[in-house]
Length: 263
Image (tube, rainbow, N blue to C red; front, top):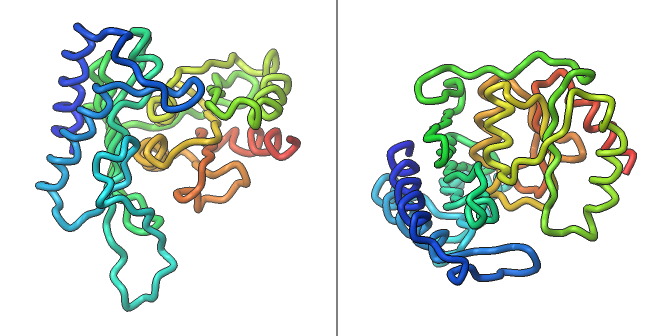
């Protein structure tokens, strides 16, 4: 999986050298895609099919549409729960368009609601984050662990999803609650990388809503295997079928969840 993510990252890196804004398409308001996203996804899907032919796909750009399925675990026990690749071929497309790091490739393997494997390759810094269930989280072979920072000195990441009108009251409340009362607040433009930075202790907490499964699946496993906590906005650890994520070092999880509940 790491090799496949790096190959896709190399393709993206080379295409960025000759990329033109004329190549950008608008999926909907402020949500962009280009031939690079689609080309990366085709490369990844083709390689993953060879790696594990029996698995289905959930992909952001739909190039594996014939295989696309949201796999749930509430099937009869006699029916084997299928495996499913969850792929974001270029997480942080707006960053990519503007030559603004980070942007990344994200690949996860899901079985029902259980994330088995996760890889996030950050292209600009040439960093590969990865984890497998019960095996720990790593950055290029180095074991990762979340921070132990308390809320007073925490560096938080609150991002701005495309569903701006629905999310504006939430983000306004989060900023009002924490700005001036924590170490600082950032937005990095990539859900996958925000999660990996929590896992690496570079960030202490991250929250975002209106995500696709491809945005957060791999990174969530990496956080959990690094000793962190991941829930949805309701505080449930059964988050894989939802669209929201709160990921922290565990120490400050309730601080963020309590602020969200007030919205």
